[in-house]
Image (cartoon, rainbow, N blue to C red; front, side, top):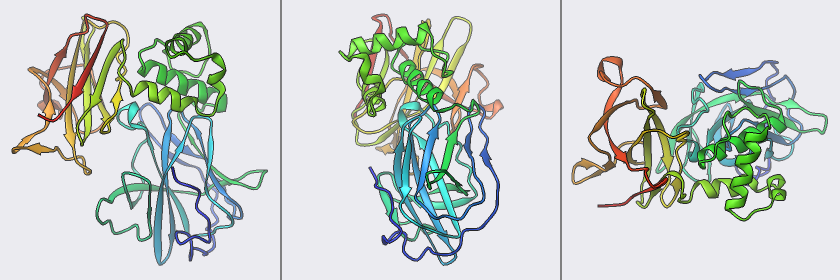
Length: 355
């Protein structure tokens, strides 16, 4: 996990230009959620922190842009309703930029990636001094300019938020609800509102892992929940990645009225993941494919390394949820063969391994 950046470090040295003064609010739209960067026009005199009011655990990367140089650093993990200092001390620059992503357990990132600046990032914790020319395992990613608000305690702060505009308490509860659903417990709808259904799902989760209710308020509770999601489960569908490659997976459910396909879920090497299969569908289908650092299909003996079957269903390259199947190509979608999953025993773990 990255530490906050000090202005006297090699990363920040030299970025002393005055902050541009412009009051505004930057909003990046998304069908189901929005990352809102609430900003105002103040010079940077103190630490910069990012606060997460989304129902997702996020990882953030920041960029410092000065006329002659641009540097980036990440990843800073931030739980729902939590804040994290990412720049220490007095720091001024032409611009501060942000890229944020949800953890892979949520599937395709709900945070839009459409910033106006393209800077370099790396898969793991990184510091890139010259971030406009990617090298090695670095890849380009969109960054959005932010101008943080100065708070009463002297910090500069930027908020990551959704359309729901949760406060801290609601964001934390919605984050717990979302992970409970992914782990196979019925805590829907994910709305940040407490009630008997959420409490019953949470109690069942705690009991299954021998935890007391006190742990819910602990600082590492989201880590506990994510670890649970990333382990095989006796209920629902679990994917486990036993390959050295990252895997992108999709799931489909047949409720007797329609077949809905949904993806993509990112599964890192050595990790497991529970796609959000809710209710009791009549049939479940699965597809997965190994990809490289640039999301290109990994090939083995000139054939893509994937795990599917005979049931052709519709997908697209980016995040998707498709409830109408058939004629995929004519609708700008891609037809892919999914494999049926036997859920008759109440739970199924699919392990992806090298042939």
